[in-house]
Image (cartoon, rainbow, N blue to C red):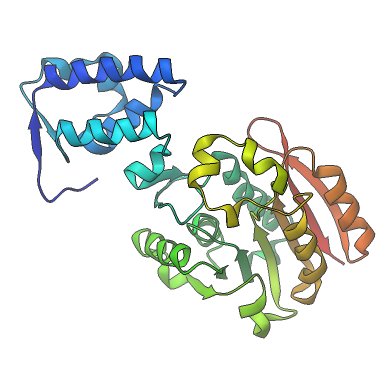
Length: 301
């Protein structure tokens, strides 16, 4: 992280804060790794330095904010349960450093697997790696940037109905040097992409999939801070997925990829919906990093 001005803090003073904060985290049910992430982001300390705690012997540590400001951020994390990513303004996803804010869903590590599944599909059918690929509900732009990174011969189209999310997504594309590879659209799902009917090689989406009645039972960090629009999938959590199953055949080429993330336990019904629709073949469910059934794939007949 670059800072216009620096604060110098003695290594011993920062180490004392570090030890106390790790204790606070343990008592508060927060991973101590989050304290490390704070110091990596605002003090530029690497993992080895933090593990050895060698910075405590340094005369000074150069910080991007004062210790008081750092502690105020930590109190917001500990007491108000604000997600760490919203406090630092950044999250790490695949090989990207992404800007995030309260107007977008925080990209999860499991969602990284969507890009791996796209690579697998295009390795199996190389011609799919060209043409048009769409990321519907782009949020931070993580998936769109991931697509642009691996599909170097494709045109990427990213859609979101939130102007706040689109601004963040565009900035991420610029920061990663991918802005000239991604077209951004303000709108709902396919609505801005009418000109691409019958031309899309692949559709990727991480839609809202949590049943409305479950939102109140989510972690405080999620239910109080992440945008409900990106979480609430209707009564059964499948409203958006159902819509994408119904509408994608109008836009996909024959053999085109339909790929979505879903909630644990939704796999069987999503597969059934895809098969019953009659427009899809090769329907499969794939696990995430924890082995949970998380992704559904189908190909347009």
